Amino acid sequence: MLPGLVWLGVLMVVPCAIILVTAFYERGTYGGVDWSVFTFANFTRAGEWLYLSIFLDSARIAGLAAFFALLIGYPAAYAIARSAPRHQTALLFMAMLPFWTNYLIRTYAWIVLLNPTGLANNFLQWLGLTSAPLPLLYNEFAVILGLVYNYVPFVILAIYSALQRLDPSYAEASRDLGAGALTTFWRITLPLTAPGVAAGAVFVFVLSIGNFITPDLLGGGKLQMVGNLIYDQFLTARDWPFGSALSVFLIAVMLLLLFAQAIAANRARGEGRGHA
Amino acid sequence: MRKAYLAFIYVFLYTPIAVLMILSFNKAGMPTAWTGFSTDWYGRLLESPKIIAAAKNSLIVAIISTFIATTIGTLLALGVERRKASASLDALLFTPMIIPDIVLAIALLSFFTMVKFTLGLHSIILAHVVFNIAFVCAVVRARLKSFDWSLTEASYDLGAGALTTFRKITFPLIWPAVVAAALLAFTLSIDEFIIAYFTAGAGQGSTTLPMQIYAMIRFGVTPEINAMATIILLVSFILVLTAQRFNRGSVPGT
Image 1 (cartoon, rainbow over the protein chains, first blue to last red):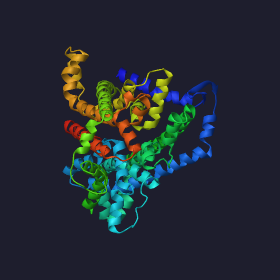
Image 2: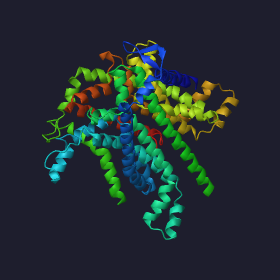
Image 3: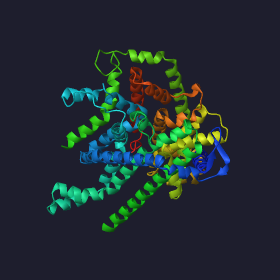
Image 4: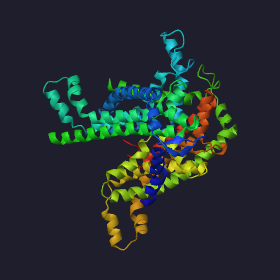
């Protein structure tokens, strides 16, 4: 197991540590890093409204993506879990398969569908819902749609696993006691699958907030998210220390969320044991 | 109701992919109208030296990084599963899967720059092994959960060395998972864009296929991309389906 640990140590832990350290130094005159001046300036700059607002915007977009992914993913997971057992594996596999294809291509497909002469607009005009092409592409709508499309398989997987672990006798008891299907779902099934919902939501949020390709391609350069900001600092502005500080900030937000989710999942598991 | 919703979700998931595939055979190439079946756009791909070179680079990176990651990742999985569960070790192995690509990309670029490592295909390979080790390790570990360690103990007790035990006992039992892991690692590597983009260096010589696709998409929607996308999608589908056949459960959730 040593070669694997060394590989991850040298090519993941050390590079991430370099980013953490770089964030405290100044940008060199010709790009690169000036190792002579230790400073917190990169972090105070990241807190300026100009950058903070990009962070907040990214969080809002990631939050909306997570919300809509849950909204369409939960019923899908529920429908798969209620299918005949011999079909469930195939249905889940079909839901996961797109995730294993090229992310760029999956995102590009939406440019083809959403552009002014694309299929979506042709279809809407054919239905008579609109007479002129709608601006579906290169805006926030397109970015959120792209994120939901790319990450909804995760949500389906997370919620399906939670539904599988759910003891069906709880729902049966609720029905026997006279609760309707909707009440049973709302009071029993949904709360008991909350850990799956949380896991799926955190996953979509985390993958979305650091995303670079989707805002770049579907936002048409008008929409900046943290990922694009970091990209610019490294490849365009050539301010590596500031780009590093932004990355540290991003990772900190992600770790906080993952940590909170892990604690919540642990607590839910503990409670589950208590009831049994 | 249930079936209708399932139909909706699969239509949502597969329409974009299907549209690309259909358009790649459209004579006019563009989605405005169907002007007849044609395979011209596929021919155009083969005539583009840039695309051929990029495809070749992607294959080199994917094959070598898959080979290294499968070897190291399998050994890592065996080591981890035999030991007592360790939360920090699990966190280390989970990190490459959850860390934003852009952060790992800039971290590796900073690292390579700092140690004055020349960038090129070899640095992309080193970088791709990082996330592929984690995926290989996860797939093999899942298989090892049901592994009966008394078999290897018996082998050691009977005087076999570590290598013989691996060759005669362990590997014959876990190879489907190892093959599946390799197929998935290959798929991930051949599709990966951001980390390759940052660790490729300035030279045109180390452009991979996703980098080429990205450049083409930025330039505008062209029918050649549809043809190339169709080929890449089909290759991914075949690889993932094969992985699934070899080892049920290797594709997460199935």
